Amino acid sequence: MKTKYFIIAIFLLIAGSVFTGCENNRENVEDAKDDVRDAKQDLQEAQAKYEMEWNEFKSDAELKINANEKRISDFRTDMKTAKGKFRAKYENDIVVLEQKNIALKNKLRDYRFDAKYSWEQFKSDFNREVDDVGNAINDIFTKKD
Image (tube, rainbow, N blue to C red):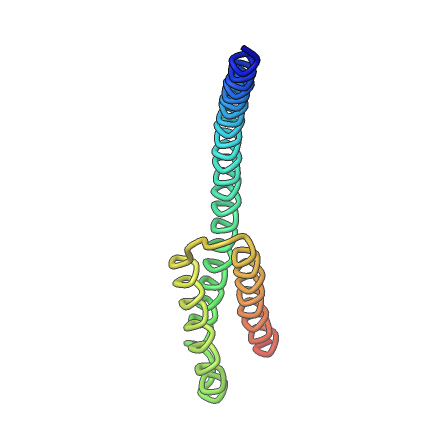
């Protein structure tokens, strides 16, 4: 008789453990589902923020590149009326700057987002390169005068 009660007691303990374990697993699954939903929402928000930042950066960069193109065009127009010595001196410089400006336009067009660090590095390098071209154009205009 004692063995019978002992077996029933062990059976009840095992059954109770199994039911308790199943309940914990259900809670864990629900928690995991909530975490996945939160992660998806965070990803969507980060993607939207990146898209907005990219569009703003691209717009600003295109404005700077277009301003450089206009200044190069203006300089070419001014060079048509300049003396031969002046024209020869700056023609090569302006061609180099024009090529750099075209390269920047292509770099902007071809950029694909990889990671936050590479994006920040790209922005920094690109802005520096655009500023370098703009400063070089300004230097030529200053020398011209």
